[in-house]
Length: 160
Image 1: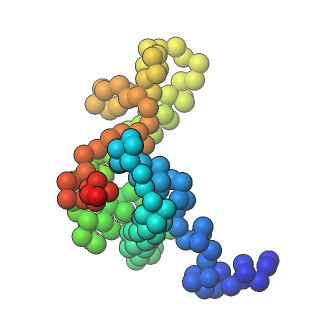
Image 2: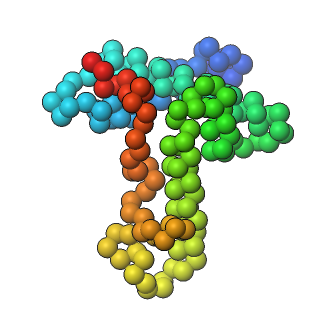
Image 3: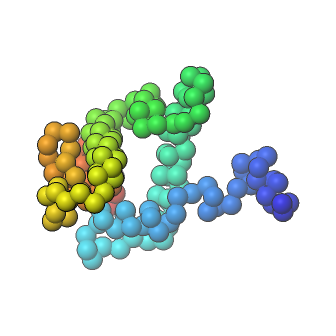
């Protein structure tokens, strides 16, 4: 193990930038979706948002981890993150994320059910349909592609 590895284990302040922040390419891709097709985003803006979202994720995850520690659990789940967001004052986002989490869980359940039927032919997967939700709706794509309406006051990326 190199000396720098030993330092980073004992002291979080010596972590490399790429270990502390979300990948800039991912942040940039998300930001580009929020601006006009001919809009540009400066490197400084991308780096600033990268630091902010990384801090936000750490903040929420830290609160959820504390809850799990108090409850003597080792795994943070989606409900823990929603609880942390509510506790930390981000309740405006929780309802839409509950919907996303439920759709994600529905699709994971459907994927498990469909995996058990490998080789069976039915119309559920014809035409790009991924599966059917518990409410009977056909699901296309993945939960990561779902679009939700975010509360208007949080649309900071759209303010120039």
